[in-house]
Length: 82
Picture 1 (cartoon, helix red, strand yellow):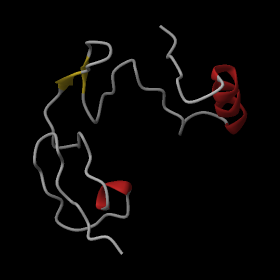
Picture 2: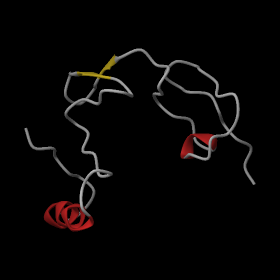
Picture 3: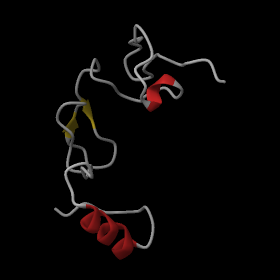
Picture 4: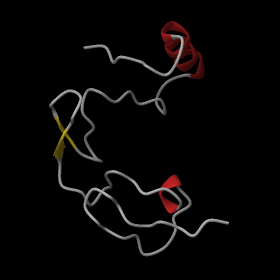
């Protein structure tokens, strides 16, 4: 098994212990301790608590809507609606 990587590459914050999410094994680019940053794609201010317009939240969508979103794109290159 891989040793946990617990340090954020954005701000250098180290988690106290594994939390069961992917950042236990793969470093996050940004975390809840990072100050807001400028999104490299859209130029808006983004933070872990307030995502910029580039992000589409799938956890609030119905499964059929998620399937339609990916089917319309034909891959994983989805462009958010303005």
